[in-house]
Length: 126
Image 1 (cartoon, helix red, strand yellow):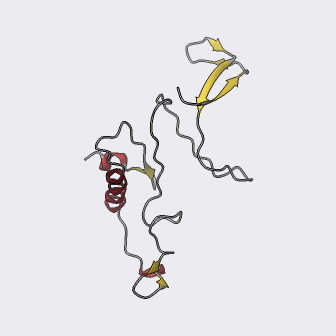
Image 2 (spheres, rainbow, N blue to C red; image 1 turned 90 degrees about the vertical axis):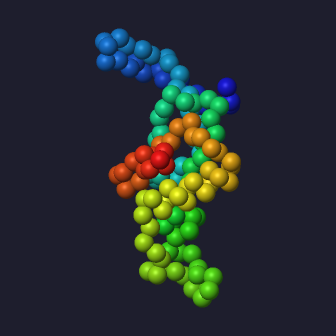
Image 3 (spheres, rainbow, N blue to C red; image 1 turned 180 degrees about the vertical axis):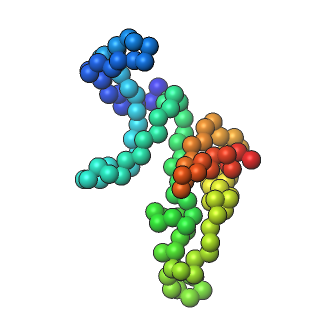
């Protein structure tokens, strides 16, 4: 395994089957920086911890580094703002496919992509 972090949970956890476990490990990795208010956390839990390559990408139209309304129009050198085009879920998926192409990834092991309350993973699998 990689250099996974491990939390040793000392508190008893009563399982639905009626048994109780304690002193059990939970393996995890973190990416990014937890802010001072601790309100920027995203939890993705799965049974895949190990030798996976995880890609976390901001969607186009977002405000965290991908192309969006805060970018400047190269033709005018002005912030695009309200002239930014309408972006659909399909547009976001197609942009993410460009990222997969960049890494030469032809098949995803797993996709978990929730946006605006809708699971876009179904779209990327088409």
